[in-house]
Image (cartoon, rainbow, N blue to C red; front, side):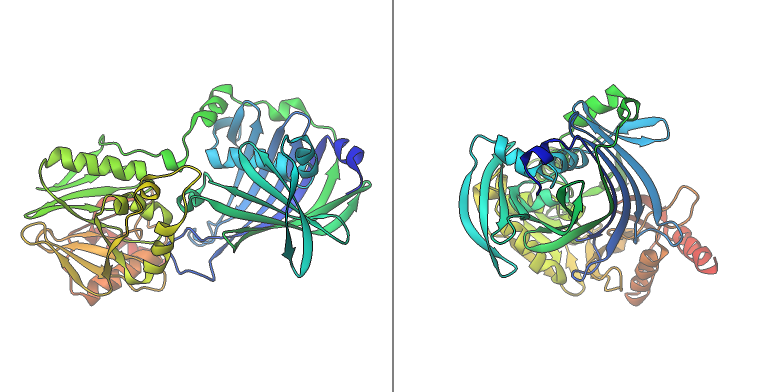
Length: 463
């Protein structure tokens, strides 16, 4: 790459990067995935272990004409913040860790990080892209790292790690990541890959292409100054895996139907022969909290089922915990393959309840209309089958004229609909099944009059 001295002399890196990412976590169709796009201006101060990433994002699932947004991430040894103007808020755990890994395991430092490790050794050679590679193996911050070195040009073609991530990939446990380095450029006497392509568990996830690269440009300390209170909070966050359930916003929808409002809504439904949990989202800890609350409210009453209405990762975040409890889980037919892989995924780095119990799932497959229970809180499950909602099902309470619409409905502050297409597909399903609906709610939406939703849809169509 130019020699150890050349690499060690790089104190700062500035990159102008174009990127794309496959949205594997979203509750639309599976592969090929919807793609998001970014244009980033990245400054790394390697000597001070500081980074600024100014990101312009194009998010395809936004409403039309509203897909562009800008964020600035600032990371220092004190923590990370998201900057909006002069206002700093704590960064999420995933962004903080990704930034730290980019500085230590990115192409500008990966060889030096390996040299500084205490356990650097040769691993078993691997063939990548039809070429045998030497493997340099070591441990960084407890993470096994492998550098695949090309036998002909001696450049690091890829870096592999095995780790548990703090973004939505945490749900897959021990994730095998491979970052390919390619499109090499000769910059100031250093061989530097302008392209990085990331695979996780063998699936192509993201790609970034640097269109400008600069080393050792001076940086200003004031640009890295941040709100220390916000930075401290960022270092103490638990990430998605540590998300917990809270009972603070309990809304009684009807006798025996308790909705717990929050970033991810969940419902405890009491029926004549037991309790049904409608959604166990986010994490195993969250699911355990919901089940604990249900047992506290209805002691001695059987929890007879969990309803998981979508394959989007917030919806299925607690399903591994449900399986470990031995509970029947109602899932859509199209989602069985994905969820089957999720419950089989190894979690040896930080074992969860299913890794310890190794119980087999008790899937209840929803492929058509399906009823659960009798009486006032009888529930009927209907697959949506829309173009954007084919991997979701809705839950109808006939005696209450109440509809749970999975992850399809959000009312904006200006009383318009976020993504009217999703609500339109719910409207089509309601008409197809001849349902009488007075009130509707969803994973991210408190109850709202169905008539109001129809009026918002009509306005959206006229606009």
